[in-house]
Image 1 (tube, rainbow, N blue to C red):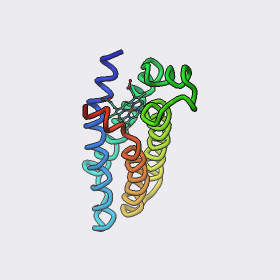
Image 2: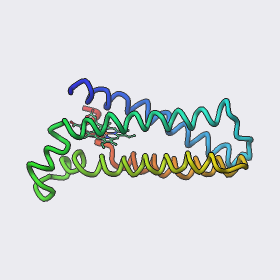
Image 3: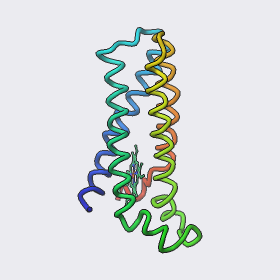
Image 4: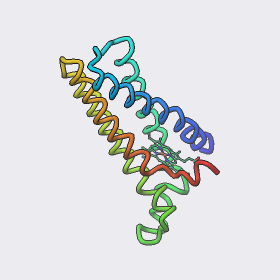
Amino acid sequence: MEILRNLHSYLAYVVLAVLIFAVFNALMGWLGKRDFTMHKDLRISLFALILTHIQLVIGLIVYFVSANGLKALQTLGMGGLNSAARLLAVEHPFTNILAIALITIGWSRHKRKQESSAKFKSIAIFYGLGLLLILSRIPWAQWFN
Ligand code: HEM
């Protein structure tokens, strides 16, 4: 159990770094009117997609086994959670599921597009929105202590 929490905590650095890089790369490709390449742009986007999904699976397990996840919600109820506890048990999990759904939509849309600019645009917008959602609900205080 503790090992999964640590994994979720450490993997978060990698997930955020790769996701930020994927969004930055897509924005640069879109604005710079570059060709979308298989060996670079597709790989970066796919790597970010896979990492967020691995984080999703680990996060879901943590949510069901941690005392700060579903158990906190069941024991105290929505009204009984203070803002820090609500962040862990409700806001972070649900916002991140939504964020990863957006990232997945961005990936699927990019595959259906033919033009490079449309591919970059799909990744930039959907991964970008996902990243903003994730950043808005990171338990920073707990993470860095
Ligand atoms: C890209 C997505 C995600 C990132 C970057 C992320 C990152 C983090 C970070 C940095 C923490 C604090 C770790 C610590 O205390 O050191 C955390 C905690 C937590 N995360 Fe995530 N997370 C993500 C997705 C999810 C998802 C999808 C779920 C559940 C559905 C989830 C459930 C949790 C729970 C329950 C905790 C609190 C664990 C505890 O205190 O026992 N996370 N997450």
